[in-house]
Length: 239
Image 1 (cartoon, one colour):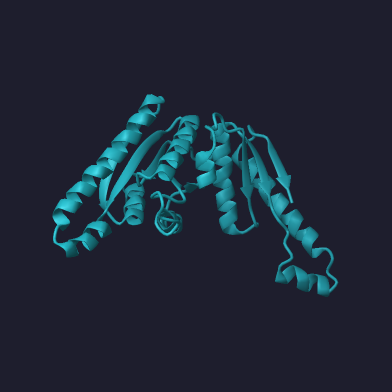
Image 2 (cartoon, one colour):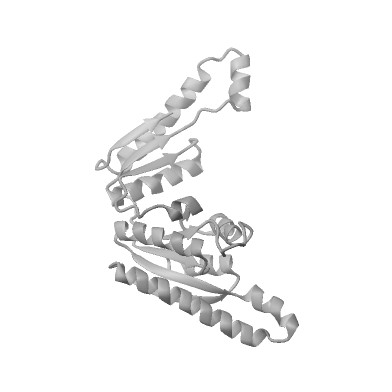
């Protein structure tokens, strides 16, 4: 059986978007019946930049206090919804501290929004999410601004897993099936046969069966993943 998610890390930067994403993360954590660690990082780069004005120590202190307030507030909110939660504060570069905390505490997954800090665009929280996705050694679930604004999801009934048949995609599919099994949700596998360079060359050579062979191979792979993982969920395969 696949590994279940027992602990999740939900970072916050205190923005409305980040808070909304955290709440959707709480919905998922409740559905998974797992423990939540709410992390707020006091961004040391802000204090370093402000240091040129001559008051870096006091700004660092204020940043730590603000970060602690953010983490405590969201942790309390999660607890009020029946989720086992803790608040954590660290100081440093946000993306780096998020990844380090997940590794240090052997967190099973990270859930975070893809944008934040009010009027500051994707360049801030979006870049943090990008860096975490690229460098984290655990699964990362990202929540877009539109998903964060959506109504609470309640129960998760379906999971869509897109795959291209690669080794990486197969590993992700394994994780996705495990997540679906834990949620008791049905799974839809989607593989898209695109008009890439290789398929166009195959057509030019008159190899009409190339795309069909690809489709069949991917379908067999996905079916194999499901059969080896669990027989307790419904599965559909789409191409």
